[in-house]
Image (cartoon, rainbow, N blue to C red; front, side):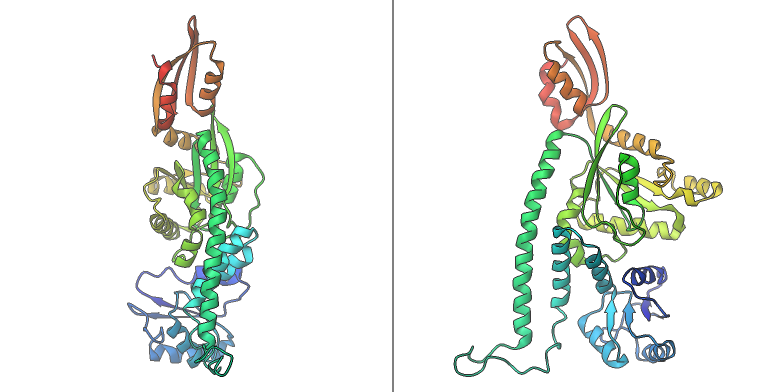
Length: 403
């Protein structure tokens, strides 16, 4: 049974239903209360709790799923009053992440998020146990089981953070190698299941594992593509969602930094969901990008899955989202236009140069071909005349060739 508070801006419980299905749970109904804020003790008011209890009895539900993150006391009160286990939105998302984590880094990050979430919920789990360790040869006054568990959890959290720091050092080395190449770095960002992985495969023309389920991709994946004489690096990262648990944002911060350090963001939106859904996806993406400090990055809004729209719907999107690029990662429609848009944004952050490269310095000409965009060349008696745009940090390397 799904429950939620409607604060006057609700988008329904369709997303919670999708999350439950992804976690292997079939929703059997919903109860929604209209109020400005949840009750601090019971989430619902007393009257609505009676309605909920009646709905649960009629439906035969054996689990309560809440669309908000519950405070520990709200969770305990609901379980006591209803006689059923209660889970909140955060627990559901953490469960999905746990089932999709395949790499060692992903498993470490998910375990860290789960431990931090559960640490605040340990009170009351062990009240049936007496204090341990009292007596000769033990720890004096003793240590309660809950204190023991909290200490062990904190020790494990510290250990996980050290391991994740080690993984991040390795990632930092790989990132520096990419930065040294001075290739433009583009990051895919957006709502989960908007088609980011499929889009990476379409742009880079490479096989990518995709799945029609929330949070299919947890680990960043970087590939490259060439277009109009330039080479670009493209990275896919974990998807966003409305009310993404802060534990996950913290645990996956190292992974999400791929977006912070990129030159351009592709904000991917599922165009098949309607205007309200599209705006929700965009707002959720902006919230996470702001949380990780990437909200000021140059960006291109990408409306994916236009193959699911009629011609009239596409035309409506052009009026409503005039600066966005419409694509279909599945059919390849719009991909050349998206590559144009990426190149235009990258070029706008580069500096124009006019150089004369002596024929004796062919290696430097090769370097220019590797990192420059919009390069044109004319062979002259004194060398190769080059007009191009270079990353601002690389212009000084060719200052001696300027004309």
